[in-house]
Length: 436
Image 1 (cartoon, rainbow, N blue to C red):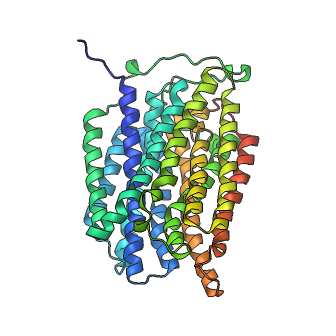
Image 2: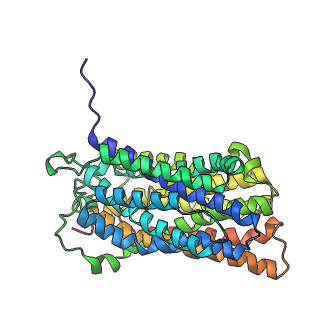
Image 3: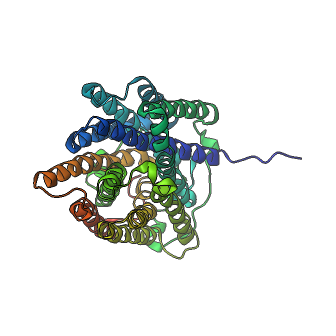
């Protein structure tokens, strides 16, 4: 019988999905392992926030350089090198809260290494994926983040309990090296003749003129239109929403375990599989958003612009409502439900702003992603660090951190940002190509 040949672009999308999965296993894993190690020696909340946010300081430094490197050197090569670097750091550096300088530097450099990954992924996907497959391809790739976070939340608390915090770092290093070997073997730079040539269906008349390209990135010698990118309002609409998405995600990812332990008197080890539900919900809703978006566009139900705006608005507004409701429940089940709804609809919103990088600048998707993700990383620095200071200020004011009402500010800030960002995207975003 003849062997069924899987299109190469499907292999690439699958590998990038696994890539983001492993990246977020690392991020969630370190948060869990460090929290346990720090609590064992009574590290205060502000210092915990500092260590947890150092990753994002490194991450923000390499976003735009990551887009440039992927454009010049090729996304495949950049992905491989960055993965090997952070994996080696995780495997070699001891997780000891008393060795603050070493921890700060190691998290900084892990952040720098991982900062190259998402701009490189967008460069690779822009090379391989035709326009009418972009929403579900990007959604599947990014949903790996959430599945990785879910897996980390499910397995790492037990691993820490039985093997200690350092075991998490070693597992992460092994996973990183394993992915690097698989990527080296099965990925490739796309020859020009092998790029998918699939015609984009007609959408709205205004967007026919700005028809999507076949996904080919600009040649590596082409001048990057930095000024136009920086001063583009549609790009800023993406940037603002990327900031808000990651502010909400990183605050929940890094501080929800502390909220469970302090306000709800429940450790992650005692929560069973329910602790992974918020991230598993993100995995499901991210892919639903991608499939729905591609269906709306290819069936000519809505234009690209209206599709992006619709899904982005629904995702961010529902997420805001769930965030504001979260501290009102004060129960583990209510918290799990609210955080699951909030993160799930945030992921649905990625079918709006996140795919929009390739709509507006298919030939410079890695560059625009680098600019956008710089804002998303700043959100990690601001959100994770600010939350620690908010809690320390509440404690200094003799407010009880074991009372869920004390945590309202922590969850209301990202909720308000979600509403603001959805309005910005409604006003300024577009689904048409604006950079040649």
